[in-house]
Amino acid sequence: MNHIGLSLGPLGYKVIELPPISKEAKDHFSELPEDPYYKERWRQFSQYILFFENNHWACRVLEHRPFIQAKAYNQKVGGIRRAFEPISGVDPTPQFASIANELQFDTNSVFQVNLHQWRTRVSEIYQGKTIPEGPHRDGHHITSVTVWERHNIIGGESTLYQVGKTEPFFEQILQPGQCLVMRDEDMVHGARDIQAASPEGGCRDIWVISINPWADRRYGQEFEAFATAETTSLAAE
Image (tube, rainbow, N blue to C red; front, side):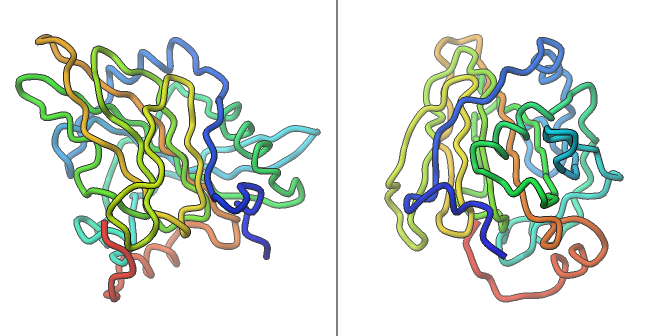
């Protein structure tokens, strides 16, 4: 099976523009529950099947299951079945389709998609730590980060590193609507912390979309058994 990220070329990443989300979807970020595993982050999570029919990409939400990362990719909470509330009131089909078209996905194939929706806050109380686990890989074919809102903040640069390196080869502040999409296995990604631009504080709202061929899905009992098994670390997170 060809890797679904081959169209990203030798660099293995690209910054693209995604279709805007609705006002209701933007407003929903203010209603997110606090992440019980990483304080200072507010988060929901859902999983989907993505397929092509009637000349367009379509998706259907899958039965809700816990989010699990293999211990090989996350030494902080890897192997733990993390229970997040499912995403509600959001139709991500246009954004999924935009990525699928940009990466020239095979329209005869089926894909499994993880969608994380989260807000990072910064204030006198909250530190603005965008990625508590630090630069990392996620263990997917494709990982992407889309910024939907930067409210009263500075910083938050998205970063990419060669595996094993400590200095990024890519560093850029993503503006609302911009999506950084990458071949996850080829690089390590991260983001700088955010700082408030004024005393009232601010926030950064993002989607993280991860995509795998259905045959190599990160969903279901078989994957969960693998992800919770004891294993030697393959990547620092």
